[in-house]
Image (cartoon, rainbow, N blue to C red; front, side, top):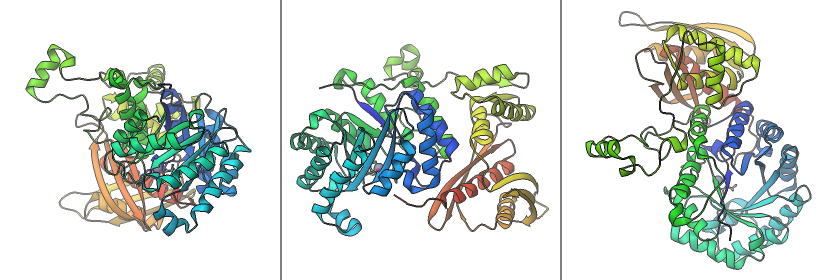
Length: 508
Ligand code: KIV
Ligand code: ZN
């Protein structure tokens, strides 16, 4: 049996289901290009029936991506499958991915159909997808809480209809590694012709076991892992791509498996996804967290200075963590800026480069040293983040301990300039209240966090806000050397995401 494990990345589909992590088409395309550079085998680009935005994103990604396969998700009905194909048909290597639940709990409370119906629908939907492409994946949702005999029957129906990948999701992150490994073994024995198709797993991280379960599955015959960058995804997220790949690589001695991933692109990809989604990476996150290679104890530092192997099982360079991020300053020219962008993985068209360079020059007037993190902020805020309904034009805030904090804000709302002033408990409160007045929005602020992007008092402040409206949450981010301006940008970014989310037609 081959020792190659395929990496199916679902950052753009399941990852986007993380509370708050909405992405627009340009942002998704940028991430897809980076995933291709990372060399993932499959990019799940979206769920086309769910919204116009998802449809467009899958279509655009399908046009751009030439090496990785591009997958589009659909439920098991003709309308979904047809729409998914419409979106993905332009891809060089398209994949249709269709799913239905198999657990008693889902059948009784959600689908309200019989087991016989599910078996019939599974076969029928794979057959319909096969009319479009030979490359079809079938997923049995909530597989780990399903009766194994029934699960086998559904998967057999999908296999018989021509599915080329059978995916076993641990949808609610319920499985324990030994149990999940055994399930994969059992399925390998029960599925007719399984040796001719790829057995895949898709694990959620509700008990913190997604990577462990995926490893157990590989040891028991699975050869495709569905995962996301930084482990983002529904609820507690999915198997983390970087943890999975580096586990296989670091313990090749024991496990003997390999992937096609180019690990030195992991760090840039992780930062890009974090920046675009607004999902901050916890410092102690394995492989890509700020502390992943930081040695604090004296004994550890002593060991590292003598020989890195004493306390390091992989090197930061192997996952692409740069030694220093100090890059440019006021005197740096266009050429240096373009080169640095390229090194960070951004290839911008000339017009966008000019815009980004203009913003870089403005920043360099306020701040002596421009770091990689500053450049990433410029690209995400100025280029990728397309203004939707609301755009900040002007903000002036008066605050202090002898005045009532007052904000005067001018926004462009659907192309029309609107100006308002308002008071608040503090400068941020005054700013948010005034923006709310202009935009006539009704969201609630759930969280407000401010971080310095880099070190030093002149560093840009990066504000992250989490807003909620009618049960939907979004994350907004903004960066500026003035933290009130950064707060306004973050708030407006979040409001734009809420507007974007309103276009979603079908939730998962
Ligand atoms: O978690 C899940 O079951 C899914 C399927 C659609 C594969 O995301
Ligand atoms: Zn999932």
